[in-house]
Image 1: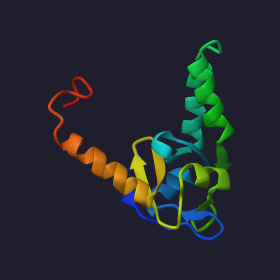
Image 2 (image 1 turned 90 degrees about the vertical axis):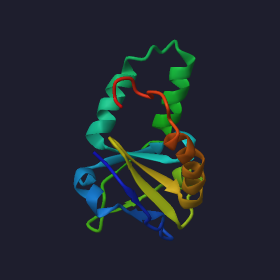
Image 3 (image 1 turned 45 degrees about the vertical axis):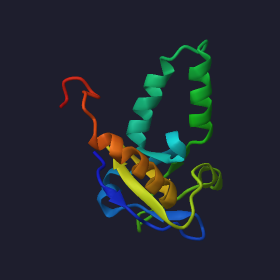
Image 4 (image 1 turned 60 degrees about the vertical axis):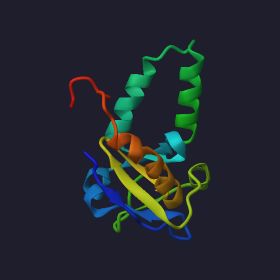
Length: 143
């Protein structure tokens, strides 16, 4: 499980140092791909394989499923972190997420998300008020 918020910097070569607490689970390999809200999703390779198996069950005749899978898989990049825990984020993914030098890396349960710092602050400011004021069950039976 990935938790927390971290603020690494993207270097001039497009490399980002993964937070130390995420490195062990991602050390054997990971997949970076486009996520919703213009962030990047980072999955351990095994988790990405599991998602792939689930997506295989989607009917090829469903246009929304085809569209989603094309964007997700066409933008996917597999990577093994180096000894310092750095990963290289390809230019196409950096452009998609508008990544500058200042980044935010968050734990999002089974995945890690990489955000442009400004985009993350805007997203969080917009969503925190609603989160604090939730008065009905978002996930029935959870709270």
